[in-house]
Amino acid sequence: MMTSRDFPAFEGAVQPRHELDVLPYFNRRSQPVVPIRAIGVEHKPELFAHFLALGEEDRYLRFGYVASDAQICAYVNRIDFARDEVFGVFNRKLELVAVAHIAVSCAPEKSCQAEFGVSVLPAGRGKGIGTRLFQRAAMFARNRGIQAMTMQCLTQNAAMMGIARRAGMEVHVAGSETEAYLEVPHRSLLSHLDEWVENATGQLDFVIKLGLHRPQPA
Image 1 (cartoon, rainbow, N blue to C red):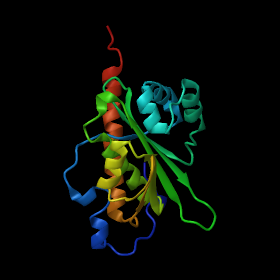
Image 2: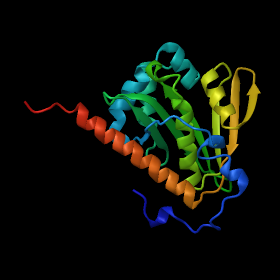
Image 3: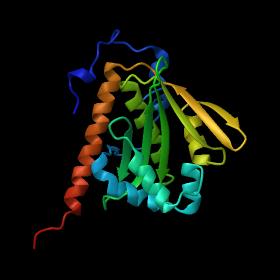
């Protein structure tokens, strides 16, 4: 739920042309409808299940090494839900088919940045979910006054490389590793309204699936 503190003073009602072409929907192309919900600490069991379901190759692409079950559990336990943001896409069984972790860093005397990491289970691939999660992450960063989105991945990670290029990120390839950077436009009334709609859609989708998932009385 948004409060008055989510709506700081805005500098005019009209956005510059270049901002309209960037976020939250890249170049205003039609996008698939993907209900995305913010994930809190109460969903740790679902996060454990999601990451543990990744195969060896997917773990290598997501973490840069073939993470063991113990390392994955340690990673989930290290997520700072008060500082970072986690977004997920649930299927009808309330399983997380896709997860995006936005790690926020604000060093003294430096601009804040948000690093994007994503994983999608095989059943959810090829549907544009990864790109939509990046858009949702960029919307989150924009409305929190975060100046830049970053991404680090293996160069062979075609899915992440595709997300970076579609987003118009500045991509730097250094051998087997790639870094990408995107300057985030300033927040606006429209960007806050877009996020409100995204939150409402994700919450409604989850409530409906939760109702369908509950056992019916005899």
